[in-house]
Amino acid sequence: MRQFEDKALVFAIALSNIDKKPEERDVLRGVKLKEKCRSDFKRRKIVRKNLKEARQKAGMTQREVAEKLGMSEIGYRQIESGKRLGTIRTWDMLEDLFNVPQRTLREMP
Image 1: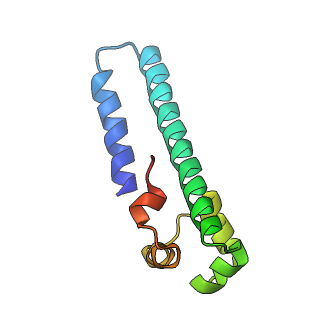
Image 2: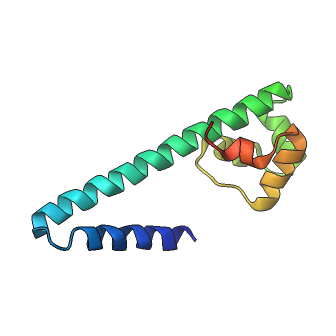
């Protein structure tokens, strides 16, 4: 799905810039992609914050959460830091463990 969204974004940029000079198109394409990267960074930052807050409210350490999920501590740290996405099963278990809906954990306020 993600790959489709990226291709759709590039196609939309190409269509909106069809009447522009090639050098203007490249500049605009770069701006759009930078905006997308900033948006991804912002989303990851919020997920990190939400997961960390939920874990701390539950009074658990990263090691304890990892043990409950049946994964390595490093694996959970990567999920909490946003370096790794985690499976649907992992998010289901986090939802049950913290008693917080997944959407709340992954959404922007």
